[in-house]
Image 1 (cartoon, rainbow, N blue to C red):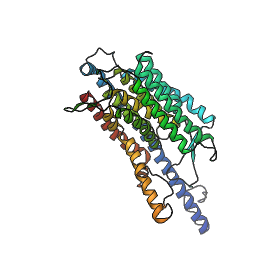
Image 2 (cartoon, one colour; image 1 turned 180 degrees about the horizontal axis):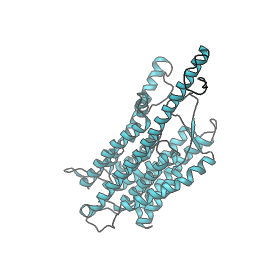
Image 3 (cartoon, rainbow, N blue to C red; image 1 turned 90 degrees about the vertical axis):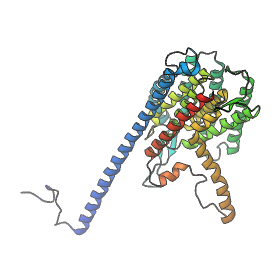
Image 4 (cartoon, helix red, strand yellow; image 1 turned 180 degrees about the vertical axis):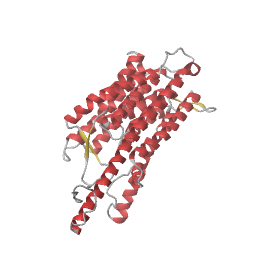
Length: 409
């Protein structure tokens, strides 16, 4: 004999009305949980597809430039001059992440990041941090291995990148390991960044980097404008770029894969743009771009590690160094438009917050600044799709920046 309450999944008419309602709620909750789990799996696959598309675009771009390198620079460059360091850095960085991420997790080097649709506002998920400690040195070492240890430009770029990485490391240590009363003050961290920017300008002023021009402080402009000599303003511009780029990358590094992917595209664009002027700096840019691409293997949605300030400041310093050594400031502004947009959003919101506090006596908003992707997420757009849109825009900007640099040189 069959028991309808146990052997068959039929409504139990003999049970009380309350028990039936409770069972229906349980089934509904289970089904909604399975739907959300399926959506999360779909978004994880979307993050993987973002990475595949990004790396494919970068590899095709660099292969095409290597194929046309003789027409661009009129010099006998090695085969796969830019593609080889890019691929080597990508593979080494991806492999190093398998070692560094578990080590950082075991050492409790965690960065707490809020996730969308949380069950409780106080819920946070820890993610291993300071990923810049493993992929930034790989990009530097691969670049020096390809151009040799006697390259003045690459050696200087490596030093400047490490200096800004140390500034970011100080910030990470202050945020992750110090309590609120012992943290490094904001003004002191900003002062250290200014000192690093001044050091960068002094190094640039005293260094002679091999270029086709016999003068320093020249900015190539698109035809028919030609070359522009801006004198000491060049040093001020280089220092400002070094500060703004690091801050811009830091602001973008709040979505999985966004900062690393956009930085990889920007570095590749600058690598192409600076190839006719300083081919060694192009290798440095391609190598750092490959290191970012390998890091994205672990930083895509959902990230198993984040780069932290040590990585974002180092990438900002590397981008500014390539632009300053080659004079390609205009391609840098184009390729890094997303970083500059986020920085501009933050700058514009500060006087707005001050005005609100002045007129209403208090700040009506709990956050001091709101990045642009915050508004996109508030409209219901999921994180991987925001990152995918940013990748598409950055791909177009990177191609345009590289082309503009080639026709300007």
